[in-house]
Length: 380
Image 1: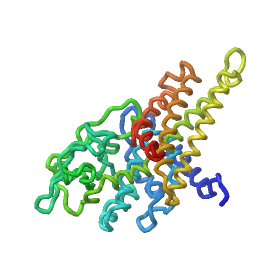
Image 2: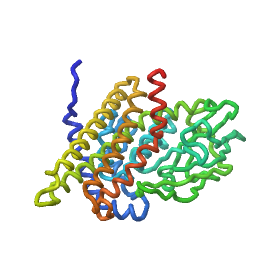
Image 3: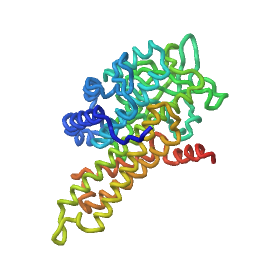
Image 4: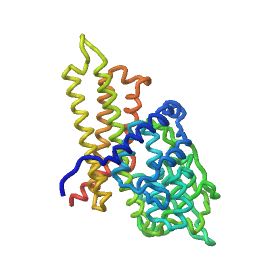
């Protein structure tokens, strides 16, 4: 089978549609919501209407029925426009709607997935805790079955969409004697008794991303809202596999935005009588930026292709996520350097790119965790 590095006509048209939507519907909102440290919720119904929330889901649930490659085209374009806004969309689709589709009952799909794809309900994933980040098996949240309900107690933190979500996929121990294995997943609605949001998390970057802490105090969860029984940890990891590829695509988009801005600035800014792009110190810097962005992009779409074709891709997904995270941080730093003092000013977007880039190595599994996964996949 020959190698093909071309996107299909459909994917190219899809990219143009996404880019136009981003420029018209998202770009005018960025500065306002960065300052407010909030997400423009009105985007979700618009995204749903355009089919952007249902790219990988079947048509029977309101989706478009396309593949992970096309999903990454969307994630890359969103990352190019606003990393913070892209993060909320990715979390809703990849971390909340996907596990409902993959593991949920038909009743759960109709109740949460269908309105999720339409943008009528917003979802989140509750996995990380104050004392359990990378070591997700050490979560302390617990659910005890009593009188036909589960009583949920615990705290989740760094939850994207936490403040505005209508439902959250929450990981909790139902059998604490079996570390990791005894974890179950629940669909917890915002209105359930004992479910409350405990303040917004203020961040260095991704300021337009809604991030908060969720607290469950004797939260009553109906039995039918059990998504996955014991063994749910592996299902959570399966969810993160696809999400890491999408996150890597978002990082590529952000890196592309930083590179493009630095490139155009270098052609217009003059020093010593000529554009600074004509100085080798700058032109070589831009060349290296272009190489790294393109390399990261190729790794992302290889992982996405493997995923779409049901091939084993744990190593490739972690490689793409790791490398894209390293690249976006380096490229954003170099973009600031190209702009010099202006790169440090808030009136130029590279300052935002620089702040947003750091999160790539921390979320969806840190760079250290990706190296552990890759090492294991190499047999060492």
